[in-house]
Image (cartoon, rainbow, N blue to C red; front, side, top):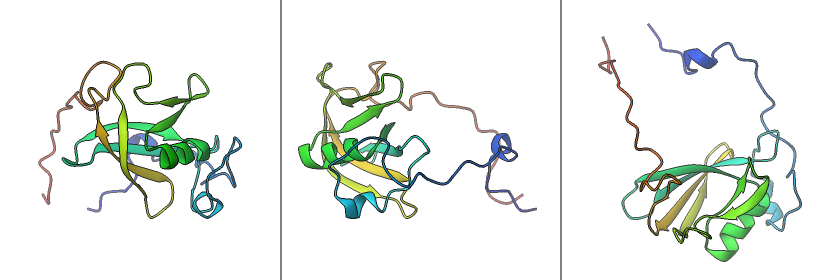
Length: 144
């Protein structure tokens, strides 16, 4: 029996537009890069952040065009805070900076992979990574 690609919880959810035609806020991002982005309706792209040398996934955040521009040109990971509606440089207040080693755009243009050299904890809770809560997997995997 084939397994559907969509999770059960979202299988019947209404579809949202694939992307907005442009950034929600003014940006200095290279237009050639901006043209490749597929943004959420509020102008954002998911950024998966990992430690460059170990591959450890540290966190997921959001970038708009200007946050990506700042990240690419300063070498410090800069994100858009959806709750505060402002830009934030990771570690600007805590000292737990993310020095950017590389940024890659996925094949669909709707996610970024940000490889960083993480100083200290990546999670606001003080944990090294935001992914420290393991969930039980009861499926055996593979074919039945």
